[in-house]
Length: 96
Length: 156
Picture (cartoon, each protein chain N blue to C red):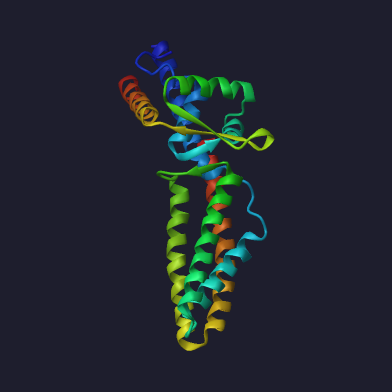
């Protein structure tokens, strides 16, 4: 991994999830799974890591088969994502 | 040197991943159902009748406004449910252009409907509103789909 980048966001699936949530009020589990092209368990694992870092919050609506899980980026998550994008730009400027 | 090249490629790939994902709430959506366009036309028909018909009682007007507002809120709720996401923030450039055209289109439609109302009765103005809103929304949906396709191609 390139030095200076947030290791929580750096894996491409998590970066994609953060970028998507930074441009949405919230997103359902199914939408994220389709966009990221991952399995249910993989998405749960990636979102669990982001949630643990305090970058996303998880919400569950309804009960049983009709229940929907959605995710929303937190203030800390938005800042971490912006910092990450800024760090990418800076690194690219320094290397190019 | 090779390490720098690898790093540059990795950073660029990370940027592409982020840009594709950032555009997804705007460009990944299910097909618009056939009833959506005439439903919008009906809403415009009802709004025109409610707001331009003379001698409408205050009670009827208030109930009508609440029904129209409830229809808008239901539409927003339905859109969020079927899309699985609600986009916010800066839209991709291609989509922004279509959105600006939409706002201009709404103003033109209001102008045409009010102009028709000045020359004819409320029912004729409402019929005009129904037709141009139905056709206008169909045009907007097609333009939005084409813009989404261009975004997907650019970020592929």
